[in-house]
Image (cartoon, rainbow, N blue to C red):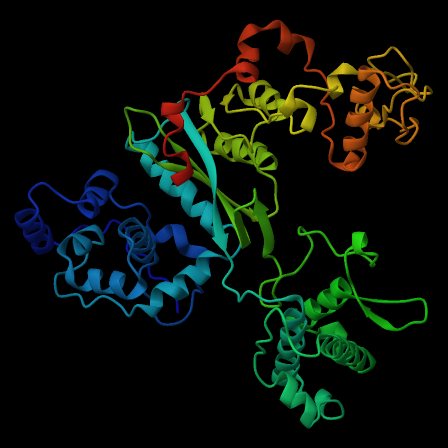
Length: 502
C-alpha cells in the first residue's frame, strides 16, 4: 500500500450544499473543516507508507476520523458507519455524498501505524500548530495537568498463573518459529499442562507441587533452548519467561529451586512493583496502588490541557508512563515539550503528586512558570497528633556529620536517636554518612526524651523512605519575589474543578 497525497482537496460542492442546508448552525465536524481546513494533510504522513504498491486510503482522513471517534465516544464500527451515513462527517473529510467510506478494521490498522516511534507526538505537534494559527490556543495562559489510569489489556493473574502462562506463551512462540526444537522436550504431560490457558484461582489444589513443577518446566525449557543456541534468536515471550522465572524463583544453598517470598517473611525477597512483570504479553505494564482504594495494572497517562476562561480547552501534551512512575518525575518533561511547541503556560495547575520544592523552583527558573498545587504534608505520626519531635527539630551539621537533638545532645549521646535526621544529603548534593547510632532507649524517662524516642522508633522502620532535603535555590532566585510565588501559592479551587476528569 502506497500513499497518493491529495493536496489542496476541497469539499465537493454537492456535499457542501447539502451539509449547509441540513445543518445551518453547524456541527463540530463542520467547524473542524471550516475553521482549521482539516487538522492534517496527506503530506504529513509521507514517511508512513512505502512508495510502491496500490494507493491506500487518505491517512489525513483516517486521523481526523480517529479524533472525531474519540470526541463522540464511538466504536470502530460506529465511526465507520458515521463516515458512511453522516453528512457532517463527509463534509469534514471532503468526501462525495456517494462515497461508501471504508471497513471499520482500517482504523485499527491505522492506530498500529500511529504507535510506531514518535508518530503520535508529531501528529499532536502538527494539530497544535493548526490550532495556534486559528487562534484557539496560545502561549502563557493557564494550563492544568493530571493523570488517568490506563489498564493493560491483559488478564489478572496470580503469581502461579503468571508463571504457567509465561511457559505456555514461550512454547507457543517457539512452536511457531522453530518447532523442531521441542521434539525432544514436550510430551503428552506438557500438552495437558500448557495446552490451554490455566485458571487456578487464589487457592489452587496442591499449590506447592504445582509451583515446583511449573518452575522446573520453565527452567528445563530455558536450558533446552540455550543448549540449542535458540536463546540468541528467541522472541519476546522467551525473554519474558526468563525474567519471570528470575523474579519468582531462586536457588537455595543446595542448588534446589525455591519459590520466592517477601523478605519480612524470611524469604529471598520479591522484586519491587516498578520491576515486576504482570503479564508475559505486555512486559511494560506494572501494578500500582494509590491510597487504600485505587489500584490497577497497566500505565498512567498524564494529560495537560488549557483551561483559560476565554478559550476552549485544548490538550497540549500527553505523556504515557509506567503505572509506578511518580507524578513529580513527569513535570520537567511536560515543560520541555511545551517549550518546544511554543505553548508554555504562565500558570500550571497540578495536584499534590506533582509538587515538590525542587520541581517548583526548577519550573520558575527554567521556564518562568508558576506551578500551583498543594505541597505534600508531613506523614509522620508526630505531625498528625501534634506531639513529639519532627525532623525540623534536629540540627544537622553536615560538615562534621553531627546531629543535635532537641535536648541539646549530640549523636553520640544515648538520650536521643538521630538516625532519622541523618538520612539526608548535604546541600551540595553529596550523601551524608549515617554515623548516628541505631535506635536506643533514652537514658532518662523525661517527657522530652520519650517523645524523642517515639519519633526515633517510628522513623527507624522507614529510613529509606524519608524524603531528602533539596539544595537551597540560587541566591538570585530567592532575591526576586516573583520567583517565590510558585513556592507559596495556593491554587484557586475553582480553577482546579474538573481536574480529575482530564
